[in-house]
Length: 401
Image (tube, rainbow, N blue to C red):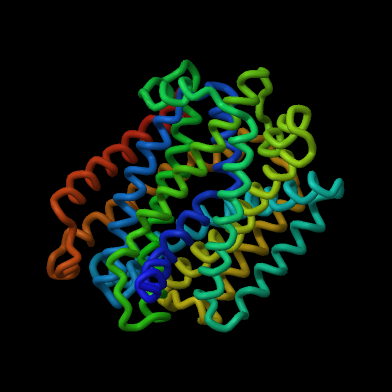
């Protein structure tokens, strides 16, 4: 029984890491804004985004189980080195653009809690993150760190939700699809961040790292389902808290820390600290995880491999952290609109990544017993249609309207 529980916990690792990476400060900012502006009415978006995220995380996991080569190495063999290289560069640029937001989240959470300036905290925790790269067995260190941070975030946000005592009938109504006037931009930004094809893509790498760390172990249950459910719960909880407090009082969200400041008059300094703990956890997990994705996939796209113990990979990961911290220290607190805009822009890249994953996972000669089931094929295709539709609509909103 004890061994069975241990194996089950081990199998959760890759999915928990993906959830921790995806749930960053921009997610808190966007979900807070959705709840503050539209109450509970957009909770249904969480369900839809998480459903498709589960589908593609499962696809990424199966690719990782079926192949010894990484996805980008496989893409290089199947479609050419230019395709793999461009995808690596694209993912690197997306990761770098969001790294500044992760660093800012670190600075905001600790500066608000301590009454100090954010810049020293940004520098300190980026240095700590770079130091983590030099731990032996970096993947295992990363995985344990992410599991601890996710547990911390769950505690902070769930406790906060119980303190605010939300309207249960409003919550149930929020799961009925509707588009309040003016909400489309936030829906696209949330979908781009929560239905994270880049995170699902990286799930294959996490699966392969787990295989190397635990050779011979059974990984069938490692497809990320539990991690994605946790991601959905945390997103919904933040939106519910914002709806119960900010929407009720008519307080707009111009930055993520507004959520914590709004709770302070109602529940005292402890409730504010609880939220800031959650913000710090989301920021730090994404700070490490996002840089790991950007650096390792850039290296793999150029043909240098993606193993986290490689000096080249560590160098590219550190580069993502350094660029992100420089931008964060230089600008400190960018407007919420820039975070939402950056999330929306990613929707142009993700359809190409999704198509590559989908095509690979349908090849029986490559996947063997892990080839997509009919359900995965149909739902995966539906997910691609959603991504393409969002990209077209977003292009119209940003450049033609």
